[in-house]
Structure formats: structure tokens, C-alpha cells
Image (cartoon, rainbow, N blue to C red; front, side):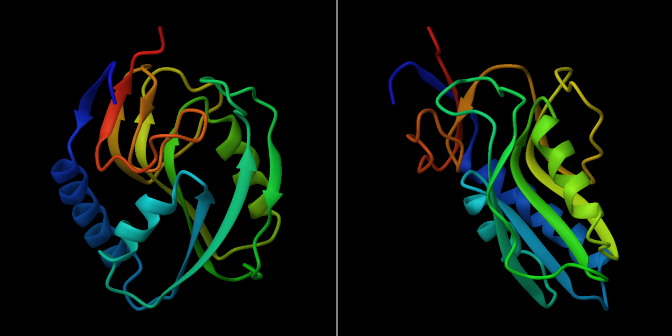
Length: 173
């Protein structure tokens, strides 16, 4: 992909997910865990993170939209696909590729909390620093990055570049 530079290598991602997987394994020792991937971006993060968690893990997915083809969140969140499973009384870990404005995750966590999970935490590969419009507590954070627009490892621009094995800064000029 021209007009981009690697920000986080595939190897750095692999090492960080192993570290987060160990932390999650320790935190939920003796418990079951439902990982909820936020589609489409989180599918790669969730697959690789789950392989690093040494627990009985179940999976479910939600699809939400707040971007369209834009490079910034619109703040308007639509649930395109809801969970297939009940979460009442269960340990739920939302897995995200990136947290930027926090608006989507804020909406998502509020809508899941009313379903009475035993616990509800967030794991995100990337956390954009200093641009949160709402306060979001991300328990498991991979990397903090600046405000640049990034693609790769599940993150896209207009549906493309999700397949890159690393995170790249995209020149949006």
C-alpha cells in the first residue's frame, strides 16, 4: 500500500496479544468467558487474542456502524447485528480493534449492561490518545497511538486493507 508507513509491526502485535492473553487468563482463572467481537474490525484481534487465552472461551459477535466510508466516527451508532446469546450472569469481554472517540463503545457497553452480565470489560488492540469524547475504561489495552488514521490488522479504509499483517498510518491527503 503506497502512501503509508508501518506503525506497529506484526511481531509487536503478536507479542502484545500474548501478554494480554496471559493477563486475561489470570484475571478469569476458574471462570468461563464470553468474548464479544465487534465486527468487522475486531475479527483478527479476537481470533489471535483468543488463541492466547488458556480458558474455556465462547464467542459471539456484534456489528455496529458509526463510520460509513468516513475516516472519523459520525457519533451515530447503529446495531447491525446483535448477540446470538444471552449474557445475563456471564463474564463478557468486548474485543475491539480500536477505541477513538469512545462513542460507539459507550453506546455498546450501556446496551449490554442492561442485560445484567456478571462482568463486562473491554479489550482493545489500539487506543487513540486524547481524542475520547466520552470516558471509556479499557481494561486490556494493546497500544496507545496518536490521532493518525490507521489501517491493517482488521482496520480498514472504505473496506480495504484489513488484511495487512501490521498497523500502518494511512496518508489521508
